[in-house]
Image (cartoon, rainbow, N blue to C red; front, side, top):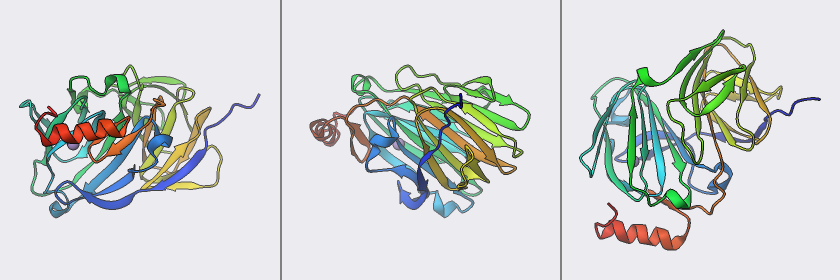
Length: 283
Ligand code: MN
């Protein structure tokens, strides 16, 4: 029997945009027709040596109904929120924030020069969890499990996946959407086999180097994301020193209504979120 393999169903090219107070970034996906990424809502990649690209940061803004996951590769960011939480993120650190019913926070760079590089992923919540109290996990770089196989270095931010027949367990395991989030550094063209739970959505974002998937000719280059089919083994071959994010999760299967920083199931719930924010009742 020939084992089914995951293939690229959709190619997405990160688009330059700006957000917050003029932060230049690349939006890998987000905005419209989000059902096909379920349970994910957005991936931003930011990276610059030029402080004018990031110095404005993300001043005070709200969120409701989903989780934001910030993963820093280089540089320093500070998070403050309406509950007087203060978190500093440095190279390799992750902040996993569950906005739940409402958070008002700022995310500001803590450097005036040098390179700033990282990602922010938005993970949706099922209806039953959207109005839960907000919560956080700040995970230091040294607390993120790392695995070194022959030619593959893995930083396991979240989930339980198999990489070349070895189980990889991330720092975060989430009960409802079971997100997997791996940062892979691949040193040689030898095959990498990744087994993602059957039926889960899977996204591959290459940010250095390039790779091919499951014997297909198309080469995914840095700045490109492949949205994969839902079943089978993922087999990839990378050029030396390729770095790629492997993101997977269990689809929620509920309606998604997205308006700015709010992601709910109905328009009425979005209107309520806007009303709550404008009247100071979001938090
Ligand atoms: Mn935010």
